[in-house]
Image 1: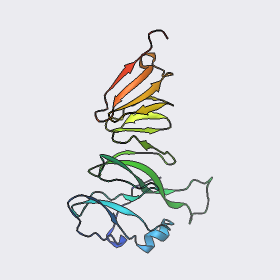
Image 2: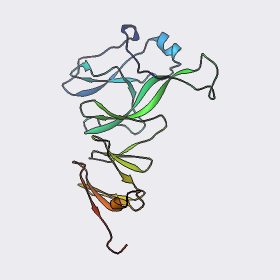
Image 3: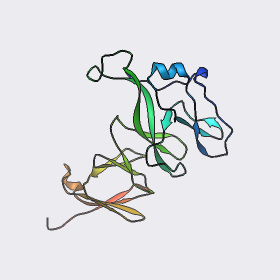
Image 4: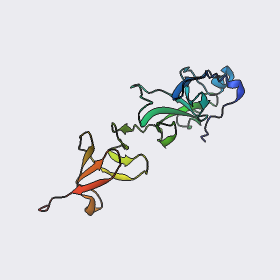
Length: 190
């Protein structure tokens, strides 16, 4: 059973008035909450804009850092969860905060939240991400294709799509990184 963390006044949320942009605002969780959910990390943040909380979601910054001024960026979203019995049957240890990668836009709105243990990759300066060698449009959710070979220019992403179930999509996909539109180049002889 998973639920989003609902902030309560006793969780100790403290926000300072920030400048007129999207900010990562550190928070302090109530000790009782930390004990209940077996939380040992203390580096959680919220997203705020103009000093106002955007949502109740708890985030942490991943290992590679982020640029929250980019059109899209990744954060680790944490939700309340219980470990399955095959991990532990100890009722005290079952509750935890499960980390899931999340793509957010420049306004702090969540666009895609991934399942646990999924590791997405954002294509730089684009509306495209990949996960498990599948390439998707962040805005529409459209699956472009599964590709093991890619190449990028400043404006386009090129994906080799040789084994698509839809034979009409086989070839080289040229995707506009800003618009997400694509065209296909096929081999006439093959």
